[in-house]
Length: 167
Image (tube, rainbow, N blue to C red; front, side, top):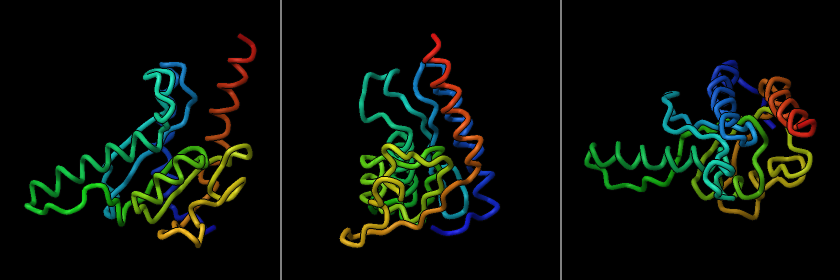
């Protein structure tokens, strides 16, 4: 793990705002954003599994898809037919440690940096249960910044599940 930078806390605020939007559809409040090398917002997402009935609609996947589409559009305007799906030099910020599916997507999208808030001791794939993001047998490795605004991110989830358990 690498020590978080001051800008990571600001970026996490964007992800937390996305997580709160998930509450409107009864989705688990997890939010994610993808930022370009200059800090420009390229994509944002929140869990939409309940809203869309799609088991792959995790916050990270939604944000990655949006960022790839935006980069594809920007490169097309610039006359560069390059790979829109490669999110090189981008940073993904997410309120909860990515699961195995999302970690795999991060590796395949070539995202070099992930910042996350709360640890997921049951299904995390960035160091708690698995460490897919830094698996040396894969062709791409990710720099991980963990625990950014951890208490705030964890509280969103704790409150959501407490409310759902009590009715």
